[in-house]
Image (tube, rainbow, N blue to C red; front, side):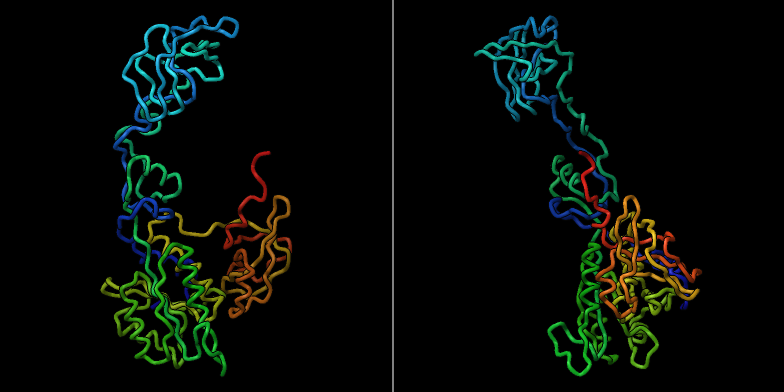
Length: 419
């Protein structure tokens, strides 16, 4: 087992061991945000036939060569075709068909004249323009043709993908499974939110924040409860999570006298690949896997709430995205100007919780205050994590730094892109 490794080394190890999950078939209507496990080819044309792009009249362009605003040409309207209708009767010289948007173009016609360029009087229509062939006609298959590869494996299903799948007649689709994450909190001092907090007991908030982080990334949290500080209780609860894809334990994987999780994991067949990452908050992070390869990935997160959330962000979240088939694994980053001076000791990379604001085209970052690993309010106020490099001891006011966006609503534009 390695100890005291860099965050980059730890992330590499985690992602090397994070498997791509298998496929499952789900309803297209439920597939938003999922990743396609197989490509999709079209078994039909879209549109299925030439159709009108306008409400108007299907015509033979050769009948209207001389038509103009001053010298309209009158045609006989022989029938009407609504959207979804059809007609096998071909137009002959001097004839037109009333068509609505989306209606198939009748045989013999080669253009559509907009309703605005006509005047109708009973069964006759006066046309004031001379259209070119194919005017206002959507060609069969111009969107999708038979056999087209419409979606590739690995595509993330969004509204457009769902619309296309529905258009192709697909009611179900194969996607990568959602990672199942078993979450265990440990400690005799912990209680549920409605529990008795007298006598120094504290609420087990980590399990709730971690479950919320799982849901935010599209994973399925499975709550294993609070393990008491005994090997037997820890083993019983860990065994209940062995069928998950990932097992996350908050606290108990350190080196204290009552940190039993490591020993229990070893007994169950899990080997830790590293413990201790040169970062703050979150140094006492552990990661392991089962030797047989048939158990979950195991993350031992620190017990302090900020440390647990930050280490989840940096290591568990990218692993879950990879397992679910995502190609882009990490939060967006931007450059921001510091509104204040920051200091630390050289040696560990720091994740500084910061609020962000806009100043014209610039982004300004400001610390959320007390950066203690137990100060959950610092995460509540944080819109981003500022990356304070391990080798640096000072960032001055006015310096620029990389910030990892947590609140992606910050990137939403405050004004529309048009006026």
